[in-house]
Amino acid sequence: MITALLALGWGASTPEAFAQQQICVTCHSAPHLQTERDGRQLSLHVDVMRYEESEHGRLACTDCHVDLRSARIPHKPRAQPVDCTSCHRAGGPAPAQPVEQYPDSVHGRARAEGNERAPRCHDCHNAHYSVLPTNPTSDVSPANLPNTCGKCHEQASYYRGSVHGQILIQQGERRKVPLCTDCHGVHDIKATTSAASLTQKKLIPAMCGRCHSAVERNYLKGIHGQALMEGAPDAPVCADCHGEHGVRRPSDEASPVSPARVVHTCSTCHESLRIQQAYGLPAHRLASYAGSYHGLAHELGEATVANCASCHGAHAILPSSNPQSSINPSNIPKTCGECHPGASAHFAEGRVHLWPSSSRDRAVFFVRMAYLALIYGLVGAFCAYILLDVATRMRKGADYLKGAADE
View 1 (cartoon, one colour):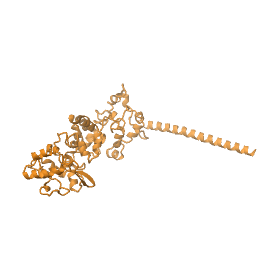
View 2 (tube, helix red, strand yellow):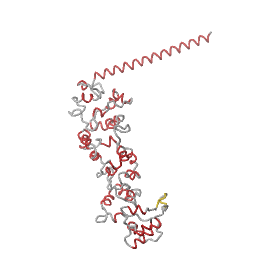
View 3 (tube, rainbow, N blue to C red):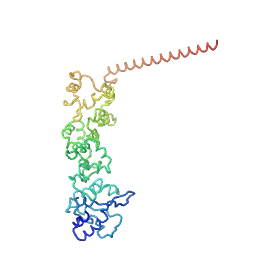
View 4 (cartoon, one colour):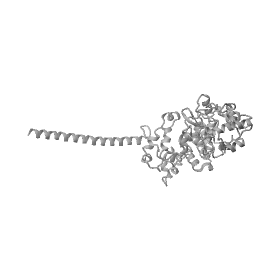
């Protein structure tokens, strides 16, 4: 096999390159050729056939390893890093955009600052077997990309378990699903704190809206979307409720927006004192829900009981003053009627998140106080009665024992 490839020249375009290629293949075609680097074994084997089939198969070894063109054999243990810009530059024989974007990316900047673990071209595209992303064997093909990014980023493991990752695993490239590069970019990936990042908060709804366009429209109509457009930094976006890399279906109990967990997800913001004070949000929403029939049933594990999204909606959340809101007084019979068929206009007469005080809902407040006083008074009286009874019995018992001792 090797002899046949050498006869073809294996990418060498000149007699000198051909001769050099023969020398390279003599050693590097050995399957077990290794070296030790940074305390670990590194394979130096090159599969000649795979290289021949790669996008770089027409190149000679020294076209990339230029420092070894005139090197003596055996050459020094560690060759100089390959400079991909020798071909991938403006006016060069290969696309220039990747190497032009990489230096200003989060990976390129980390590399420039001395982080040797930051990925370079061959860490993602494979050193000797680089093929187009449309090739299923490519390390950056849709099916393989999560594993490639996962070599450095543990978030990839969450992605594999997500609804997006599971679709990719089960259906492969037959169905379009978002990949790491769809959200973060390809060669120009920026830190999330950068103003140029594709994952900055204000851009996330539009990003998710590429696939979920109807959801994006509803979100932007709602109070959260309007707050985001007005520049409110605390306005929740898709990732705040659904998660980032581990997005799951709402029917999955592990999802933050599943019926079992959505109350906790909503209360993360709505029970924050800082957010309540900053945006004038009403307090005690979680406590008033938890004390209601719905809240108690939810706490006991009832999956079909009403939760935040059941009444307020999921994406097109509107204030009760909006005629289109599901909790507008004129719409409450319909909203409640989803669970309570035949709900009448009287459903809209009572307060839902009831948290009575001496200045608001006073009748309910004082009735509640009287009821609590009665309960605590009765329990206290029973406890006092029991203690007195025990004390009396102990005293009588002591008198009996004393009398028996005197006899």
